[in-house]
Length: 247
Image 1 (cartoon, rainbow, N blue to C red):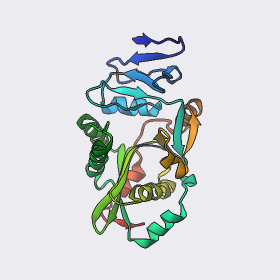
Image 2: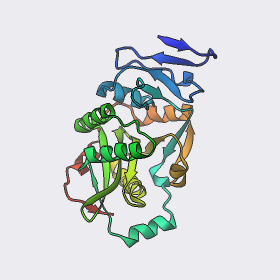
Image 3: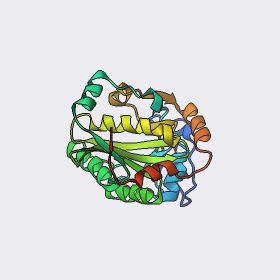
Image 4: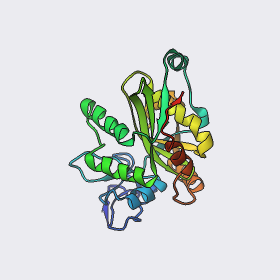
């Protein structure tokens, strides 16, 4: 079922009950840019399927679930992460530690709470439950940054095949989220992750080395990097080590 727009090219799809229902990304709306579908649910099967096709949910309660596929995708090649002089100084100045998958629920909780305090958040209770379930299934992962045994920054996202879909990050102290991303980019060499999806561009992400990629190219990359939906066993293995590692 679809709702027609002013242009025959674009349409907004109402998702069916099937978790494999897939909109055509090339028919995403221009206004709001990238909106492709509405409805469905946040089941693990649907989330993994739609992520593998380049869609992601982004909505605020009490709105229905909205699914997006931007014309220009913000992506980061881990090898192209840009570390500024100021970030190098910050890393040398203090003692930083990192861990993987040790505090997933705390990370997503901070990402939600800090945004709610500032501009509002899409990371609702339902979103937190859905991604925590994906974490327990071995698909969603968190990177945590510590100072003196205190969690001060990090981010979370979904790993499938050789792709990582970044969702949200937070910092309780300056530079913590940047250090989390830098650390993850270094870890990707051993995890087989070749590209990080940052979804929507921002000056912050572009300053760290992210680039815009046309939708068509992004879809082609997904077909290459996600030949089948499987867990990233290396990230799971790293997360089984309870000790924190120095940056």
